[in-house]
Length: 325
Image 1 (tube, rainbow, N blue to C red):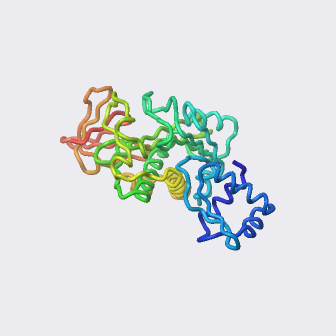
Image 2: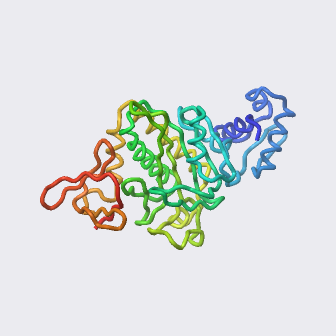
Image 3: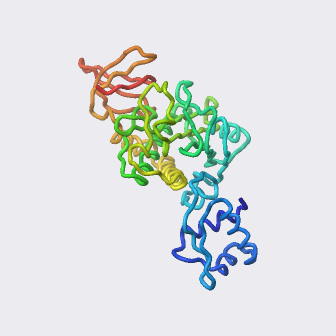
């Protein structure tokens, strides 16, 4: 779509009722004929737009598509989403974002896709990514922090997704250390951050975010290691994917701005309140071998899991799968 189409969509989202062709022409700096062509392009893309003489245009409904113009029209962020890249189908948004970052992509660049053929999960696992139903995106950040602090951004992403779920559905998610979101004990979202860094600083961090929005039960693989679900399955209502994407990016922007100003503390506190293990006994296993058990007491400044065993010894754990007892 033409870039000015995004401006038209944004005006439809912010203005109540009809928008006159004169106002659109003035806002976009183009002729009334050009406005009509842009409206026609939107209609051809699945948007239902009513036109009434002497009143103007009114958006009736939008298609359920993830595209940069639709998402941008609902953004109110300052950093995240300043540049949007969209691929109808790609191997991995994290790989695309990493390549763009290496080539100088600005901080806040977001890569979106409708489907992935090789979505990445934690520890080399595959993230099932059917087209047309979910959110798959990756965000380029260039924070002035040390490399050992980069894992803090995973927790920031988790809180942003949790907030977005609560703002767009009637569901209350829980966060599982280090990077999963659960509803009714089943995984609904996963995060994967990747980094390019030198000894004394970070070149960039890629925040990879996958959220199961409208997947049906039959679309999940049979060989999942843990139970999974979608917002549709849990709420019984289809999720507006562009709205969810923009809501999540807006929340991520707020959290990132606060993180740069106030550090990890506020994010850490909210993450711990939302954690499914908060104040409970857990067992942490690595590669299927139970290794450490104890009372979950939080995460430290590097995002490591903190447990207190029965003999009052505190354990710091940096990797593994957590099971709440």
